[in-house]
Length: 231
Ligand code: CTP
Ligand code: CA
Image 1 (cartoon, helix red, strand yellow):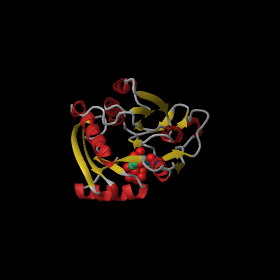
Image 2 (image 1 turned 90 degrees about the vertical axis):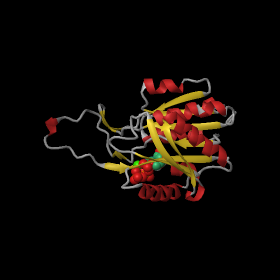
Image 3 (image 1 turned 120 degrees about the horizontal axis):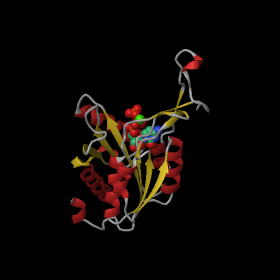
Image 4 (image 1 turned 135 degrees about the vertical axis):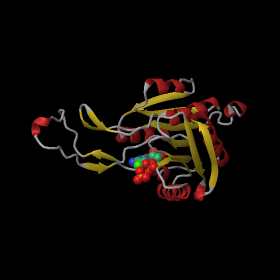
């Protein structure tokens, strides 16, 4: 609702938003994945388009019903599966974007080998799955950004308390070199697959740049408000 009161503050701004979660194949029928639905990223894309931005939504394994909310003439959707595909799509779409928002949940590791054939129990024993770390996509985008471009990361944390969450978030923001970091607390019963969300927004140098609570669209509006204040 907030967005409808401030239309046009992103008019003509080129933005890229990633959403969803990557899947790293093990064999033709199995993958390592995570519980991200893509709802927060899609809400960020929809909010930006409603404010006049030209949006590229890079969607990693976002189901059709969640994508529905991104149906807007101002939104172009690029579909990816793995972290490597997401990285390539972000590099391409991010090249001439003024704002890059990395809301997708990236698998930290991928299997070293992808079996061409389905693993079966015939082999005997429990198959070991050797993993290798994926590159940090948002850190790479932040390191490569040109003057005037803003890079925003998200972080999902499962902390003991809010102070620990903010400490971890500040360290993460610094490590990744991003302009803004949006942190939300997740757990078995919150964050994922939920309509509601609560976030803290950290600005440059770890400063408090806002908090938001409510629907994912309301959170998206607060995130864009913070981005607009930084521009
Ligand atoms: N991210 C990324 N590339 C990765 C991992 C994460 O671009 N290989 C991005 C996510 O999209 C998100 C931010 O980094 O915007 C924070 O993700 P998070 O998983 O919280 O950070 P990690 O550095 O992976 O730290 P952790 O060990 O807490 O998972
Ligand atoms: Ca991670």
